[in-house]
Amino acid sequence: MDLTDGILNFTSFYSVTIAIIVLFIGKALNFKFTVLRDFNIPEPVVGGLLFSIIFALVHFILGVSVEFDLAARDIMLVYFFTTIGLNSNIMDLVKGGKPLIVLLTATILYMILQNLVGVSIASVFGLDPVIGMLGGTVSLIGGHGTAIAWAPTFAEKFGIHNAMEIGIACATFGLIFASLMGGPIASYLIKKHNLKPENDTVQEVGIPFEEDDSKIDYMGFLHAILGIHFSIMIGMVLNESLEEMGLKLPLFVTCLFAGILISSFLTPNVSKKVTWLDWNTRKKALALVADISLGIFLAMSLMSMQLWVIVDLAGPIITMVVAQFVIAALIALFIIFRIMGGNYDAAVICSGFGGISLGSTATAMANMTAVTQRYGASHLAFVIVPLVCAFFIDLVNVVLIQSALGYFSG
Image 1 (spheres, rainbow, N blue to C red):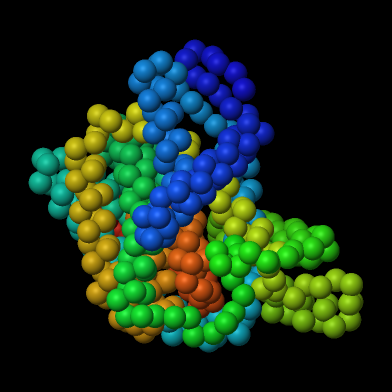
Image 2 (cartoon, rainbow, N blue to C red):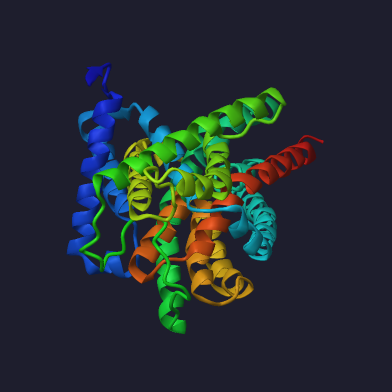
């Protein structure tokens, strides 16, 4: 930790430690204020937003900017999605085939609408219509990473020199709205239709709130860590192989698939032949690791948001994101819920759609985690939502962005 030229830098160790404190504070606030629990607002979101506001006040009052080393955050993301893969198998994907295709199709259509809304609002404000793409799938469906990756193209081809700031601002507001949208939507649907989980399955992420006698022993936790690390190693090899073939994917995607392959083919055989190595999935230890890694990732993402960067661009950006928020909420309530079956799984998927539409894959998972920890597990949601938002729509988004930029440049 050091203060240089008005910038307070926290190393990775301090960043993780602060993130854990953020989680504790978020949990305490959720416990104290029932409204946060009633609307299923994730604990890391509550703590992370509070700290990002505090750091913004430090910037404006003391002139000191707070920055974090976020290397550990990316590791937590890989851990989390590896646990999701280990909690799934090929048969789950076969069973979830139709819902997966339905959700993917609806999401792609929504992505086209999202870009149209962004372009229209930019035009209303008298801005270059192409800026609306930055308030569309570039930053909302795509998130901070996509916005940062495409900003140089907007600057070079269209002369939008503040494209980076606009993209980051839209992604930041989108992340906030996405974190606050999913839980309330699912809670409303569950209560209105009196929905309940169909099967009594083990929680994929975290331990349900009502369980206070959940015991995880030493060997159970060690088995989970070994399975995760083995899957990550396979995922890293797969990632490098695909990159050599010209297909570059985020590491967490290949680790997710490695986990699915291991749980489908290796785990059953290992458990039968090697009795001391219990790799049966959907255990509480694996759910605990998933909960911790997701919580730290999201806490670090939100507490590190530099809100002071987006003050000057607040007007049109907030208008764009609010409009996108309203449209996404309406689509989740009246379209996604119905086409996904109108049952408990559909309600949980709607909370995940809130994260997909405006935030990130991790936000979608955090929304669903908050809902399922209160109302019960939804294995289908945790199978199809990460595949839609962590893999397929990233590929579709590249095609949409390139097509739109080609249209505007032509």
